[in-house]
Image (tube, rainbow, N blue to C red; front, side, top):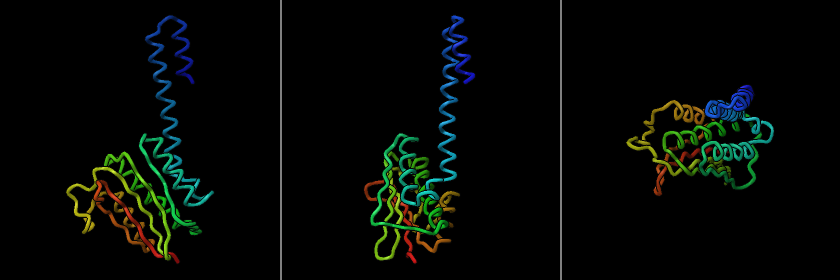
Amino acid sequence: YQARALEKKIFSGGNESMAAVAASIASQAQIAVIQIKQLAQGLLPFELEANGLIPALQTLATRISTTYDIICNFVHKNDIVINDNNLALNLYRIAQEAANNAIRHGKAQHLTISLASENGILCLSICDDGSGFVGIDTNHQTISGMGIKIMQYRAKQLGAKLEFLSRSEGGTEVRLEMRMV
Protein backbone atom coordinates (compact mmCIF):
# COMPACT_ATOMS: atom_id res chain seq x y z
CA TYR A 1 0.00 0.00 0.00
CA GLN A 2 2.86 2.33 0.75
CA ALA A 3 4.37 1.69 -2.69
CA ARG A 4 1.03 2.57 -4.33
CA ALA A 5 0.82 5.75 -2.21
CA LEU A 6 4.38 6.61 -3.21
CA GLU A 7 3.51 6.02 -6.86
CA LYS A 8 0.59 8.49 -6.65
CA LYS A 9 2.70 11.09 -4.84
CA ILE A 10 5.56 10.86 -7.36
CA PHE A 11 3.12 10.91 -10.29
CA SER A 12 1.37 14.02 -8.95
CA GLY A 13 4.81 15.63 -8.67
CA GLY A 14 5.23 15.12 -12.41
CA ASN A 15 7.92 12.42 -12.43
CA GLU A 16 6.23 9.70 -14.50
CA SER A 17 9.33 7.49 -14.86
CA MET A 18 9.85 7.28 -11.09
CA ALA A 19 6.11 6.71 -10.62
CA ALA A 20 6.43 3.73 -12.99
CA VAL A 21 9.22 2.31 -10.81
CA ALA A 22 7.03 2.67 -7.70
CA ALA A 23 4.15 1.00 -9.56
CA SER A 24 6.43 -1.89 -10.50
CA ILE A 25 7.51 -2.33 -6.88
CA ALA A 26 3.86 -2.36 -5.77
CA SER A 27 2.95 -4.96 -8.40
CA GLN A 28 5.87 -7.20 -7.49
CA ALA A 29 4.96 -6.98 -3.80
CA GLN A 30 1.37 -7.94 -4.62
CA ILE A 31 2.54 -10.95 -6.67
CA ALA A 32 4.84 -12.01 -3.81
CA VAL A 33 1.91 -11.92 -1.36
CA ILE A 34 -0.15 -14.15 -3.68
CA GLN A 35 2.74 -16.60 -4.05
CA ILE A 36 3.29 -16.71 -0.28
CA LYS A 37 -0.39 -17.50 0.25
CA GLN A 38 -0.19 -20.30 -2.32
CA LEU A 39 2.93 -21.67 -0.67
CA ALA A 40 1.28 -21.60 2.75
CA GLN A 41 -1.74 -23.46 1.37
CA GLY A 42 0.59 -26.12 0.00
CA LEU A 43 2.39 -26.51 3.31
CA LEU A 44 -0.84 -26.87 5.26
CA PRO A 45 -3.44 -28.42 2.95
CA PHE A 46 -6.57 -27.27 4.81
CA GLU A 47 -8.73 -28.81 2.08
CA LEU A 48 -7.41 -32.24 3.05
CA GLU A 49 -8.63 -32.15 6.64
CA ALA A 50 -11.82 -30.27 5.87
CA ASN A 51 -13.07 -32.22 2.85
CA GLY A 52 -10.84 -35.24 2.27
CA LEU A 53 -8.24 -36.42 -0.21
CA ILE A 54 -10.19 -36.12 -3.47
CA PRO A 55 -11.07 -32.40 -3.09
CA ALA A 56 -7.53 -31.72 -1.82
CA LEU A 57 -5.97 -33.33 -4.91
CA GLN A 58 -8.40 -31.37 -7.13
CA THR A 59 -7.33 -28.16 -5.40
CA LEU A 60 -3.68 -29.14 -5.80
CA ALA A 61 -4.15 -29.67 -9.55
CA THR A 62 -5.92 -26.32 -9.91
CA ARG A 63 -3.20 -24.55 -7.91
CA ILE A 64 -0.47 -26.13 -10.06
CA SER A 65 -2.24 -25.05 -13.26
CA THR A 66 -2.62 -21.49 -12.02
CA THR A 67 0.81 -21.08 -10.46
CA TYR A 68 2.88 -22.59 -13.27
CA ASP A 69 0.60 -21.80 -16.22
CA ILE A 70 0.53 -25.43 -17.33
CA ILE A 71 -2.19 -28.05 -17.69
CA CYS A 72 -2.71 -30.16 -14.60
CA ASN A 73 -5.74 -32.43 -14.39
CA PHE A 74 -7.04 -34.55 -11.56
CA VAL A 75 -9.13 -37.64 -12.28
CA HIS A 76 -10.49 -40.30 -9.98
CA LYS A 77 -12.28 -43.59 -10.52
CA ASN A 78 -14.84 -44.97 -8.13
CA ASP A 79 -15.82 -43.41 -4.85
CA ILE A 80 -12.73 -43.52 -2.69
CA VAL A 81 -13.18 -42.78 0.97
CA ILE A 82 -10.02 -42.59 3.06
CA ASN A 83 -10.73 -42.05 6.73
CA ASP A 84 -7.12 -42.40 7.84
CA ASN A 85 -5.69 -38.85 8.01
CA ASN A 86 -2.10 -40.12 8.02
CA LEU A 87 -2.71 -42.14 4.83
CA ALA A 88 -4.45 -39.22 3.15
CA LEU A 89 -1.65 -36.79 4.07
CA ASN A 90 1.08 -39.14 2.81
CA LEU A 91 -0.73 -39.72 -0.50
CA TYR A 92 -1.21 -35.96 -0.89
CA ARG A 93 2.47 -35.26 -0.17
CA ILE A 94 3.61 -37.92 -2.65
CA ALA A 95 1.39 -36.38 -5.35
CA GLN A 96 2.65 -32.91 -4.46
CA GLU A 97 6.33 -33.92 -4.61
CA ALA A 98 5.93 -35.90 -7.84
CA ALA A 99 4.20 -32.93 -9.49
CA ASN A 100 6.86 -30.49 -8.24
CA ASN A 101 9.64 -32.75 -9.55
CA ALA A 102 7.93 -33.07 -12.94
CA ILE A 103 7.71 -29.30 -13.27
CA ARG A 104 11.07 -28.34 -11.75
CA HIS A 105 13.30 -31.09 -13.13
CA GLY A 106 11.33 -32.52 -16.05
CA LYS A 107 10.01 -29.17 -17.37
CA ALA A 108 6.57 -30.80 -17.77
CA GLN A 109 3.78 -28.81 -19.42
CA HIS A 110 1.02 -31.34 -18.80
CA LEU A 111 0.36 -33.37 -15.66
CA THR A 112 -2.35 -35.81 -14.73
CA ILE A 113 -2.89 -36.81 -11.13
CA SER A 114 -5.17 -39.83 -10.82
CA LEU A 115 -6.56 -41.82 -7.94
CA ALA A 116 -8.34 -45.12 -8.42
CA SER A 117 -9.42 -48.08 -6.36
CA GLU A 118 -10.18 -51.44 -7.91
CA ASN A 119 -10.40 -54.86 -6.29
CA GLY A 120 -9.09 -53.51 -3.00
CA ILE A 121 -5.99 -51.92 -4.58
CA LEU A 122 -5.53 -48.16 -4.31
CA CYS A 123 -3.51 -46.59 -7.11
CA LEU A 124 -2.17 -43.03 -7.09
CA SER A 125 -0.55 -42.02 -10.36
CA ILE A 126 1.16 -38.81 -11.42
CA CYS A 127 1.94 -38.72 -15.16
CA ASP A 128 3.81 -35.97 -16.95
CA ASP A 129 5.11 -35.07 -20.39
CA GLY A 130 8.49 -33.85 -19.15
CA SER A 131 12.00 -34.97 -19.98
CA GLY A 132 11.84 -38.00 -17.69
CA PHE A 133 14.72 -39.55 -15.79
CA VAL A 134 17.60 -39.09 -18.19
CA GLY A 135 20.60 -41.30 -17.43
CA ILE A 136 19.13 -42.76 -14.24
CA ASP A 137 18.41 -46.44 -13.69
CA THR A 138 14.81 -46.35 -12.48
CA ASN A 139 14.60 -50.18 -12.49
CA HIS A 140 17.06 -50.43 -9.63
CA GLN A 141 15.72 -47.40 -7.74
CA THR A 142 19.12 -45.68 -7.72
CA ILE A 143 17.43 -42.34 -8.08
CA SER A 144 19.00 -39.68 -5.94
CA GLY A 145 17.36 -36.57 -4.64
CA MET A 146 15.80 -35.81 -1.29
CA GLY A 147 12.26 -35.46 -2.65
CA ILE A 148 12.32 -38.90 -4.22
CA LYS A 149 13.81 -40.45 -1.09
CA ILE A 150 11.05 -38.88 0.99
CA MET A 151 8.41 -40.25 -1.41
CA GLN A 152 10.00 -43.70 -1.11
CA TYR A 153 10.03 -43.40 2.68
CA ARG A 154 6.37 -42.36 2.78
CA ALA A 155 5.39 -45.28 0.53
CA LYS A 156 7.34 -47.72 2.68
CA GLN A 157 5.61 -46.41 5.83
CA LEU A 158 2.26 -47.08 4.13
CA GLY A 159 3.28 -50.56 3.00
CA ALA A 160 2.87 -49.41 -0.58
CA LYS A 161 4.79 -50.09 -3.77
CA LEU A 162 6.20 -46.94 -5.41
CA GLU A 163 7.54 -46.98 -8.96
CA PHE A 164 9.11 -44.39 -11.25
CA LEU A 165 8.25 -45.40 -14.80
CA SER A 166 9.35 -43.98 -18.13
CA ARG A 167 6.35 -43.45 -20.40
CA SER A 168 6.53 -44.60 -24.02
CA GLU A 169 5.08 -41.27 -25.17
CA GLY A 170 7.68 -39.39 -23.11
CA GLY A 171 7.76 -38.20 -19.56
CA THR A 172 7.41 -40.09 -16.34
CA GLU A 173 4.76 -41.82 -14.27
CA VAL A 174 5.11 -41.99 -10.52
CA ARG A 175 2.83 -44.83 -9.43
CA LEU A 176 1.93 -45.87 -5.93
CA GLU A 177 -0.09 -49.03 -5.34
CA MET A 178 -1.28 -50.44 -2.04
CA ARG A 179 -3.85 -52.83 -0.69
CA MET A 180 -6.67 -51.11 1.14
CA VAL A 181 -7.61 -52.58 4.50
